[in-house]
Image (cartoon, rainbow, N blue to C red; front, side):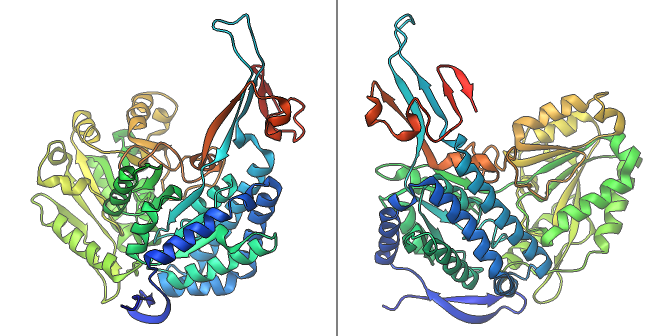
Length: 509
């Protein structure tokens, strides 16, 4: 039977643009993984890895025009957004090149023998080594930053792990182009094509997670798809780490004092955040706890005015559009739910932004209103009006893990007066990033960044953004009483590579 074709589709019209590939067979997935496995030694040299990552950024920038044009044709995200995302992706690649050169990620620790300790300490030398082939599952909503050249790929290559990417069906033509660009960068440094494999198709993704030579996986997508792959990774004869980002509600709490102090500002900021990118950000605020009463009414009015002025937009594909339209309609039908600005279908190919309101009390107990505590992908948020702090805390107590949690405080509360400190502490167990008087959309690529959170936001405690994302693809190993001549050069006393390390309990830079 012939392999199924892979088509590039224009989300603005729903029409097929071109056939760009065919879905990979099990044999083709096996070949891609084996080629990646064979490329491990080629990535062993840190200087080569760093240069390769910089060349990836250079080549992506050189091909920017055609890449952005193709990405826009497949995602409808627009050139401005896509140029910014590509710039972020190139910055991330160069940032990981610097991390590789610095070498602190190796976490070198050396302890010389100490017979006076109880029990005695032998000669111990510890550092981290790459896991092996990493499977990367691309996201739909970030065709650069969370796809073929994105953070999972960049951090895995930085760790010394070859990558096989399962392309997202919403941008297959872009995926093919980017893979060629990155392989061109590899060739500049004598690296084989196998350092970056690319496969298409649902079944190919299943085969990839089961392949015995795949050592770890990174995923960004839905709860349903991510959980299925996570379970498959755990069910293997040799289970592997699965770092999945699955879904997030990203709650926001607005205090009564904050609403009274700056209702218009908060309403406008919320409108901008929840409709950014047609609501297709993983950190979109999907639930907002707002006080009942006059202060909260002012905020809702501001939100109504701002959202009413946002035009309809195109989602990444028609399946997402159908799910959005059906999802908001089902939520709006619940008793007590109101739609100050009704979200739903715009034209045949677009959706219109909006928001729903509901008494917070209905969310404090299990039942049909649990639907409002589930992520709805697209330009919509739920505003839950709470009568008192007990209701607000009751809703927070029912929330699952999230990527972000935000609190909007008054100026006095932000200085530590009132409930500001307690609210920040209450939100901390819910999310990997806690924001004060800001909005969660926009994830800075920085050493201190953490993009992750308690399940179901992610399946592990690691981050997919920022320098420490490299830790996902490494494992520690210790050499005990090994003669100097047998040790990896990174673990020798004279430190010929000048690595940051902890030497006999003292941190050396």
